[in-house]
Amino acid sequence: MKKPYLLLLALLLPLLAVSQTPAITRLNPTNWWVGMKYANVQLLVYGPQAGTLTYSITYPGVKLTKTNTVENPNYAFLDLSIAPTAKPGIVRLVGKKGTQTVTQNWELKARDNSPKAQGVTQADFIYLAMPDRFANGDPTNDKFADMADPSSDRANPFLRHGGDLQGAAQHIGYLKDLGVTAVWFTPVIENDQSLTDEGGAKRSAYHGYGFTDHYNVDRRLGGNAAYKTYVQQAHAAGLKVVQDAVYNHVGNNHWFIKDLPMKTWLHQWPTYTNTSYRQQPITDPHAAQIDRRVTLDGWFVPFLPDLNQQNPYVANFLIQHALWSVEMFGVDAWRIDTYMYNDQPFMNRCNAALLAEYPRIHIFGESSVSNVVDQAYYVRNKIDFPFKSNQPGGLDFVLENAMLAGLKEVGGTSATGWDNGVQRVYQALAQDAVYQDPGKLVTFIDNHDHNRYLSEVGEDISKYKMGLTWLLTTRGIPSMYYGTEILMKNFKDPSDAEVRRDFPGGWPGDAQNKFTAAGRTAPENDAFSFVRTLATYRRTHPALHSGKLMQYLPQDGLYVYFRYDASGTVMVATNSTDKAAALPTARFSERMSGFSKARNVLSNEALSSLSTIQLPAKTAVVLELQR
View 1 (cartoon, rainbow, N blue to C red):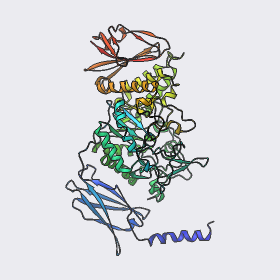
View 2: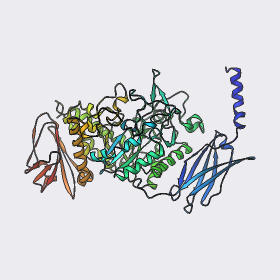
View 3: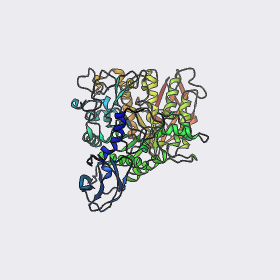
View 4: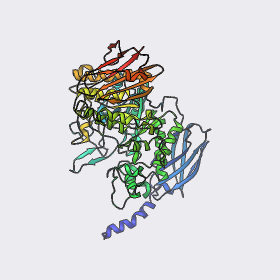
């Protein structure tokens, strides 16, 4: 039973709300552009009693077609139609209630001709970095007392460390030297929230996956201006930028979570319900509806409220933010977090809007699945699913799993087993027929959620080089996690923070600076040079990055494939055993006919005869075939 004063307060609150003076404190999107194909914009208006106002707009080419009110009187959703004839300028929004008048300016900008939405292709090599852990260029923005998470402490793995976009910009040259052509940051959007673990210790949302204001880049990273500057500097250096998007959820400190527009803004359950993280109920033709619902509508974790994308207002909000981000910042590609947990018809609608506005943009989502059929479901595919995805690409978890499992067996007794070792890689690629275009998948061997690659392969440099050779020579768009090139290591146990350590040299006063050759050890420089050699070769040789792939069934632990087009042929031959092997090449005549010699891309050694190729133990060689 409520206490009397609480009951009285509950009765008075609606009356107090009605007596508030109407005001507008937020407009989302914060602006729009003339000349956009997406010309029917739904403007979210927020403020005390903003939903009780009667709105009007008087601006040439802009028409208010409908005012939508919802359960919460602090919101109004205004449907605007922007004509092709509309000119850039300030649109004056007027809201009236009785004798009260509220005005707010909303800008229509002119579109610029700067590079944007260039897409990423197999010709690219993506570098994934976590801004907070990469480099600190401006220590003055490390922390702010008025934010929910006001701390910064590099000695604490769970707090923010101060990395920012200015710091990242200072190392664009390092990435260029490495052979990188595109940079993917974990989300840069504001995460103004503080987390507490089960033991009561404070944790930061430094990773970026709990948005609290879609239209602000986190000021600890430098804010909107720093992000726009970074993209411009990257483009000037010939690098593309991938933005990390999250549609499935937001942070529990998001401003609209504190004052929900309506109950159906989120997936609500009688009691807290977590997703099962199970992929099978989505594609299983025999699945129970409750299992599907738990997978899709259950919350990812308790502090990330799950958005209901079947709510048309939520869907419009998210789609418009995606378009706004590309146009505002000029990013080139769009990586989508937790793709499989989203409402898939909504995802198709959002993808279609991006592709209609930016035909060259590449979209690739994260669906952490374990088999080819489930992976194909979330991209354009050739399977007769009841639902057909229009997503162009996706992260290739199946190939990552195959490569890591195969590498662990390299050199061991099971390396030549029926389904072991390099057979795993071969078999994963052998199922590519399910995809409309497997070359649009983004391949990887590590990321911010997985164990560090070097640790996964037991710190075995031969295996390390073998896997990176596969990554940079097989089909798909390769992506590599920051620090892999300098042998950063660690397992997620006891926490994810162990695989998200600071890049040495990214902070003033660091004892070691791994951004320079002088600051790296001999093994680190060897690893860096190995990646650079392969990445540079890939970028400059179309046969390797966009040619066809032909692979041969592995025999006795030896795995051979070719990348080829009219301009050239590259042979990749792997010896996964612990003994040197002589590889007769007569079996590969379909691809090697007419070639009599080769150059070893990694060693620059010339091979004057190709009848038999000598393969050292636990080695993958890359040969440029010559006539």
